[in-house]
Length: 249
Image (cartoon, rainbow, N blue to C red; front, side, top):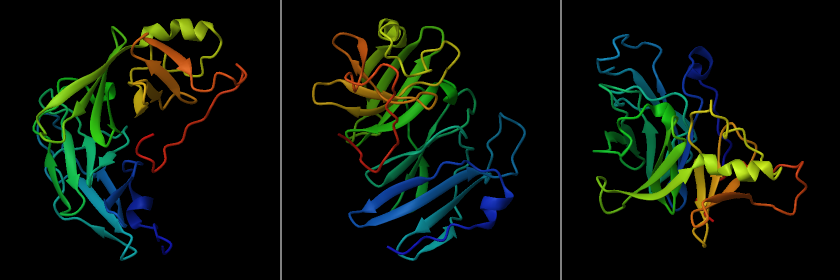
């Protein structure tokens, strides 16, 4: 694969979303997608920001960046990492008329659209997280007042059908923290972002990560408890986590 040339005028002159989506189009074809809010925007939060997002795609076959002319009419939520699976990339939008929407980008046709519905539409995007589990889009929502996080999975057969797969009480990790193994700061009451599911294990346990944390934890839905994924390590050590191209375990 040829080395990509990523130097762009936009990289120097504006402050876009710092998150890029590296996604698979076909078995041997990948694209780098950069969707960001324009530096020109409508100050009226109740109005659609028509044309105020920009998108650039890096085609590895052509080894070049190019702009897309048709971009979403909703500004995206800056503080997020896009999720991608099955040739699609997903972003959360800013709130419009009290709703947070999900933008979908088709890598083959290079077109945008909105998901018709999502279970956390009434929540602020600060309280929502997108991820991929078992090659399906999943959405997490955390309620700051109750510290309860719910996780839904989008069914591949219908973009209007979401199934709740987990309900996690983040307060239940208090017993784990008392054991001296706690390595996360997301248990603090002032952190409102939900945990990010990383993978579902064979025994239905789920691995969780958080941008404000230092590693991974494992949640058991049967016992409703957390544990370290490396119990044999010293309590003073943490296990760092970095997202990779591996989609599941």
